[in-house]
Length: 414
Ligand code: NIG
Ligand code: FE
Image (cartoon, rainbow, N blue to C red):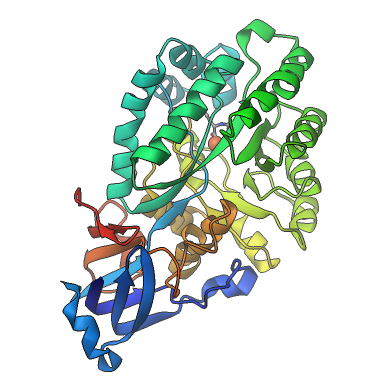
């Protein structure tokens, strides 16, 4: 049993069955002042204001959170954090003027990470990825989705997914995995994209499903990568194995990715820099979470997605880090909130909703994570002493995490 008492603001207090927050609902962030939170095992059992605390709770192990905030852990619903090596030389090329697409055309970009990963053993890949997991735990993430997509052969895609599985088993993070065989056309299939798509469908998806290695399927549906037709075929095949889509769409153009995602009842469509009226219309009324990745727009200096237009149209918005070696080499979700506030004109309340309950939905975890609700998993951030929740995105470079609770346990590394 664990009691957190004297909490200055207990944020994101919600009823248990909340699905997501959309449109004007995103502006609301319910919180209690001078509050307590009571945990048994790995679950949130009770919470309220200090005045009403039950005397029995004071027998538990106690954390005093005076002048501190408590909020649910971040859920990061889109990352590629299993990778080999790094790509800071491309960063330098970008500074000197090359675009993301130009770098990709020269065999850099994703294909650069593919070469590095193919030359790395499974154990070594695990060893390189583990510090990233530890880093995002310290920064407040409690659940993360990780994609494959730097293997691009059946053997190497399976290797990546096995590493993701092992990270889930051996760390305290809740991890969901996504098969992204259609991330780029491998060099060996240059000008033979159809042949590669056949391998994804006929070889990779069945092999991934046979080992139960993926929760979701992804396709990079965009200009210069995979077409709407390719995506349609891959998502149809994956549906036969129970893999729901979470796809990369409309990062580089009005690619039709959003519409094909919605057609296949994607759990999320992600990036969405190029979102117009047609795309917004197709998302309205769907079960698909529009997910924005402002770290990638920031890092690549690209156009921003029209977040305000989307919220004003009544859509929900989730925000994820896209942690990957090419377009967003950071899993700092607090910084993602700051980018969303500054670049996308989202308010702190909208940003906090977008990195908790809405990302929990975007990875199928909304029943367990994303809010302070009775019966949900006790994965929490206790902040340092701060004036109030608006300070979190405002102080964009400060480490404001004091203590991390994961699955009811105080994390030793914070
Ligand atoms: O989400 N857009 C496609 N894939 C990744 C980039 C991966 C990379 O550059 O290595 C993304 O930005
Ligand atoms: Fe991505």
